[in-house]
Length: 211
Image 1 (cartoon, rainbow, N blue to C red):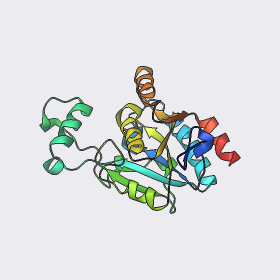
Image 2 (image 1 turned 180 degrees about the vertical axis):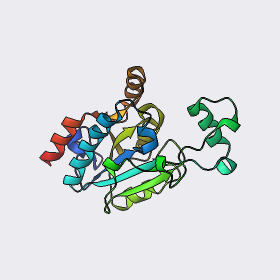
Image 3 (image 1 turned 45 degrees about the vertical axis):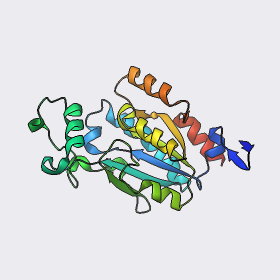
């Protein structure tokens, strides 16, 4: 920790890994997304190791859920994004795959939020846009946000950037963030090194256990 101008400036994981000042964001670990991941069972267990550690230390946990609206009300940006993600050339081919209350929209059963946790819906890649996440974190004086889930290069990277812009210290637990290729992973990690603390599951859990 460095101190300047009356401010504590965190520099390391140890500086921010306080369950009272850090929240865990589990990004889009939904049934419909897990079905698209090779070895989804193994990856879910990797994410669960972080969730279990956070629960042991009574850390506040938020689960984001990517949501799609019916095509008739989805709007331009949502339809264009869906076309790109679904790799279709005509808007008539877009399928709203994550409608609220559909089976694919739900958090995977292995990670089901506890009554003391919350899942919230979002329409965008950043978990902070159009959701109550920022207000909820500020209201309990959270200073750092640990982020895990899927997919790193699609939604986690913009969420990390947005967290930093809002004044939080983002902590990216890289082996609990899914990526569709090592090239994509390397590019995203390189992009985020200047604004996030990047760590791994074992280091994060060990640091949390020392708090």
